Image (cartoon, rainbow, N blue to C red; front, side, top):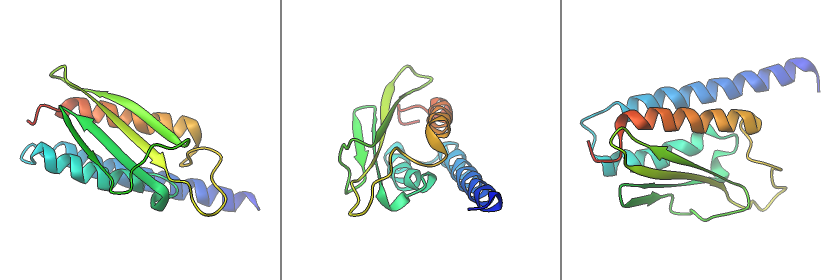
Length: 135
């Protein structure tokens, strides 16, 4: 494959990530949105940030609540991050890739491990401004 195909793929990845961050920021900054609904929307939104959204499933644990994708299960292809808040409550975010019926990705895609770590850090940082206390 030529370098232009690789550059185009990288650009598509960055555009997907930026769209996700814009939606995430809007969601988290909506102070009128009840926490339960925010968590449900986050669970629906997060797979879109990954290269294979149809294979991703999400669980968010926050303030004694657990919201997850209907097909959520822990797998070998999983990323988790603690999500702290301004009110010293804690939560946990887990994204798993389901075992596909075709060749599995070697690792969670979406720009590689560094991009995935960056995505988790951005999410945790944005989340800390909202908090899990049902504000």
